[in-house]
Length: 188
Image (tube, rainbow, N blue to C red; front, side, top):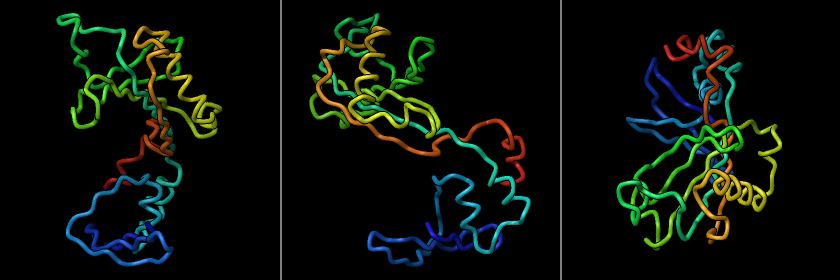
């Protein structure tokens, strides 16, 4: 995203860079942003007021790693139906002996997310900063860590892991401290 053109409080178009490095204006009636607020405010044309830019420049973010593990089965069971997959989509992990913060069971979002219904795709989520050692772990080590941690808390047996993938997403979540207390000034 190179620029966000506005007229008052309405976005009228965006200047985007394509894969070849060229730029072009995209006009529309509706726009949705998933970019960090700092980047959004910086891209505004005309420029946002100096106070808004100062606040957005100081916002902090947490980064995010998700490890996808394809497993043949879970060791944890649904208490009402021991032959069924547990029903949860997301499970927050609070155990102090692991770094993982949340578990997703993709099968429970949609059966279309899993090619083989006899397997289970899990997403093990880690909230961190890109300066922490965990962010820099090679993918194979990150996958092994996720499998060990899920084994430690009784979700899977490590031997049941069939495949894995790792996705790192910088600046995923705003940090709700520091200058975030003044975020309303940016939003308004």
